[in-house]
Length: 339
Image (cartoon, rainbow, N blue to C red):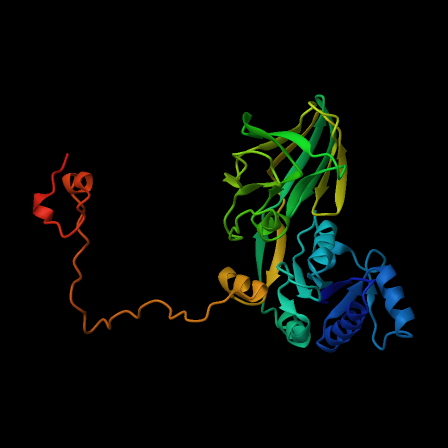
């Protein structure tokens, strides 16, 4: 049975075109069938005066459902574009980073040949990333519906005017404030726009919804993490005529006049990402952000089972009387009073 690998590359970047030609040749040489969209294939053939190996055209010779894997060459933006393509099919994405940080990518440009070999030997696993459904209402009328892998970002439409919003969780109002915007994100998006807005980094396997205000004028405007079963909503108040715009993954936009309401819930359709390593997310953070870890010694080694070490006594509780008196020195546990 023919194993088909769809190649998606950023057509506007020379390094991406070179990587696509190289990856296509390596896939064919490994016994796999490279597949490309018609426009990308024509672009490559025009740029390099043809290809020295056969390829198949997506939508003409091959259906998307017949593809085993999508190999994405580019940055996170290119991977988000690929996620749109596979939204309704069971095909995983494997990103090769040609951009800057590339949190969604699995490997780097220098590892391209090795990545092809991993694909050829099926040495990859697939994990699911939570996405969100986004619905826009205006004065009670549903005007738009879309989705996002990273975030739904509500931003002020005019540079000189901040927007007035009220946030809501599970049908109950939380707080209102003026701001430049607000980000409603997934754990995957916690290292993207929400991170820049001061939101927390959430491990991908944690299912949650995030709220991160952007430059809010309020005493209580902290980032929040809520249940994935919750419904988040943001209303654009009509106290001023300042309008907003909704951007989902920076790719799909909806205008939000005053009186608009944006609702966000967990989507039943995840995005599937192929993984070729078991590198923990903490190590990915260290590598992508170049975090300083010098001096780390690691967990204390356990004692051998054959030679158990001495028992370590538990730290005793502090008696309420000593707490009240401010004396938290050595305390005899026998003198502790229990209620």
